[in-house]
Length: 247
Image (cartoon, rainbow, N blue to C red; front, side, top):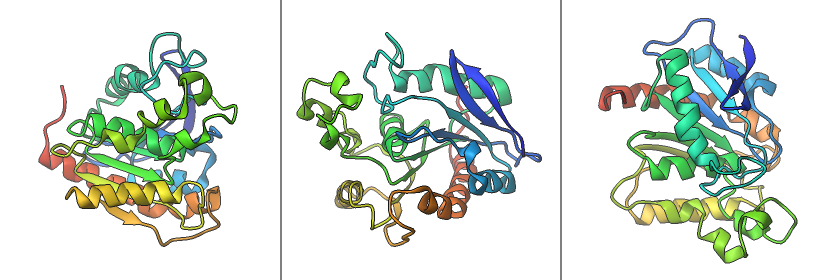
C-alpha cells in the first residue's frame, strides 16, 4: 500500500497506487483541510483505498481555501481551482490514463468546500463528490487573521465566493454525499443549509448528519472512511457507465 511524494506543477502531492487496481481504473482527488493533513497520514483511508483498488492524489494547497481566487502564497497568477483543472487532472491522465468522470472528488473541511466549488462549476466532468464537514461558511472567519483576509476586501466579498452560491439549478453533480458530525458547532449549520437548498431545488444528494465521533476531528473523519471511499468507488464506476471518458 505505497504512498509516494510527487511534484505536480511545482507543488508537492501525496500519491497512492493500490497493489491491485480496480477495473475500470478510477482515482480520488483529495483536497485537505486548513491543517494540511492528507490521506497518506490516515491508516483508515489508506486501507479503504487499497481495499477498493483506487488511485489517489492529495495535492498541497497550503491555506488557499481551494478557491477560484488568486492567493499570492499559492501562486502569483494561477488560482487553486485552476491549478486542479489545468495541472493536477492532466497529471492524473498522463500518469494512469484516468480521466473524468473516473476521478471522484473528496475533501474535508476547507477541502470539503473546495471539492464542491469544483464539482458545482464542472458537474459533467466531476459527477461524483464527497464533502466531509465542509467549511461552507468560511466567510465567517473573515477578520481573524487567516488567508481569506488577504483574498477579500470584506466578509461579504468572501461570502460571494462560497459554494452555496455556485449551485446550478439545471446542472449538478449526479452523485453528491454530504456528511458532518452534528457536534461540529462551527460548520454543521452551513452544510445543513446547503442540504436544505439542494432539497428545495430538487437536486438529489445523500447525507449523513447523524454519525458523531467528537465533532470536527480526525476521529470522526477516519470513522467515515469506509462509507466515503465506498461511495467514491461505487459511484465513479456508475459514472463511467453513464458518461464517456473525457479525451
